[in-house]
Length: 128
Image (cartoon, rainbow, N blue to C red; front, side, top):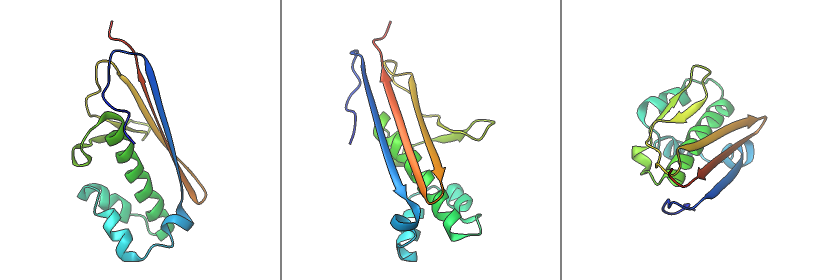
């Protein structure tokens, strides 16, 4: 679901996805997990595979997929054009341009045992 074009009106969109890693991902056949991993750029695929335990790989995979979904949907960026980086504290953020009416785009991916939760918030304010 996309928030649509950004206008000068004030609005706030917020979405939340919860993925049960053990049930939703752990039960998938290895071929399907490989297909999902292939949606990531090669360097992120390598980061996912660097984890030794399958559960950790699944968690990392879901986290990266959710981050890309957040940016793509919220900012209307093509999946392949999503650009992510990390702060010094390792918190992910997008380096994609934000619309002038929505300079405060934030997203977060949290992990708990067996689940991943992704949230994004898009706050749009009229341009001054």
